[in-house]
Amino acid sequence: MARITVKGVAEIRGPLIIVEGISGIQMGEYLEVRLNEQPTRKGRVLAIEEEKVIILLYQGTYEIEKDEIETEFFGRTMQLFVSEDMVGRTFNSLGEPLDELPAIYSDEFRDVNGAPINPTSRIYPRNYIETGISSIDLMNTLVRGQKIPIFTGAGLPNNQLIGQIIKQARIAEEIEGEKFAIVFGAMGLTMDDYIYFQRLFKETGTLDKVVMFTNLASDSAAERLLTPKVALTTAEYLAFDCDYHVLAILSDITNYCQALREVSVALETVPARKGFPGYMYSDLASIYERSGIMEGSKGSVTLIANLTMPNDDITHPVPDLTGYITEGQIILDRSLHNRSIYPPIDVLESLSRLMKDGIGKGLTREDHPSLSNQLYSAYAEGLDKRKLAEVIGRKELNRRDQIFLDFAEKFEETMVNQGDVQRTMEDSLDKGWMLLSLLPKAELTKVSKDEMTKYCPEEEV
Image 1 (cartoon, one colour):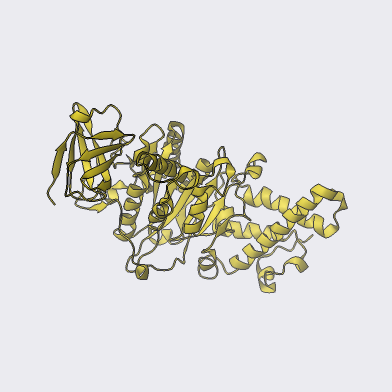
Image 2 (tube, one colour):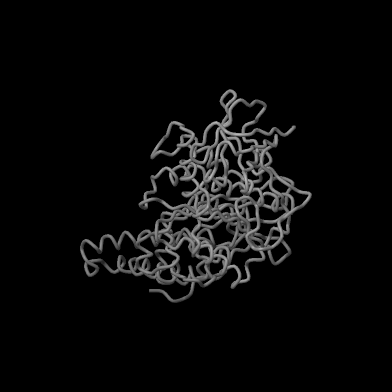
């Protein structure tokens, strides 16, 4: 389509500008705004009301004079140049380099909004991604092609956990030549956290497998809305065109939703819960559903979405709506963190709905399903005994109850609390059997005798 250029705007409203007396414009159309002696700003058409066009400027509307604006509509949606050379690079939310290396230009470019995946073309996820963290690998296994969030709270070490996953994550077949990459989309990142991630990538040698898109806290909130789109566009290209297995990590989704609320207020839409727009569910779904495996492609996109629960409230609209869309959740627990247990993952409250299809014989190890079920059951009973002991005192518990109470403490101290140590899946499984050796064999009702004979140490309490 032909480009259309318009001079001047009718109104500036927060991050929005409004142009009147124009026709032939499409929803979501990409545009550029030129200003006197200022860099060009990029944006998209957010709404159309007869001959009034409402525009969202990604770099904000600060220091703009209405009469000085020249807006050029491109007749298409925003596109991103994509290439395998993006792996090992850092960009801002507009795809511009932040690492002082040349910009990416290639013959390949993609619509940042992506394209809906035909449900009949989706392949059900089966294989797992190893994170090196026992609470995830053993108890809440991450399956390739899955979408799962990390629910955290203010002050909890979610960035440390994300950094550890980026550093340690691998696929089982990586040693056989499969290609693996991580796409990290950071929204509202503080400068301290940005420096932390950059230093971590360089010191651990993981930068060469990471593509990072960064929106800093000092950047425009409107630009935050673009970050997950460009990150997932890159992930889709690497997965479905270049046959990579991609782990996409988006953080922090709560910052994204707050930017969505800011724009919706400027747009004067009717608010829903806590002022968030009513369309937030479908907006989040358009992000999360871009993960998966497509028929005819060797690659996959697995999505981890980190989000902060305001006041640790899991019923807040952001975690609440996320839970409806995703396939489980990893929850960080403040009480574990206060006891210096890292990573403070609440194993019982966390859930991977696809775990059962990604573990077992031929995938992880034949004893994995029954072992994780037995550990879950024993840990849950141990926590029940802990609550009872808080009421009547530990000495009033019988011998069996004290054994399960001790088991829960050992489970947290040795399984959950692993620090920055990386554990292979084999290490996590063996450590699980070591813990089960603390229980009487008569209590191990969820594992078979053959598995106990093969894997369980002889020591028994």
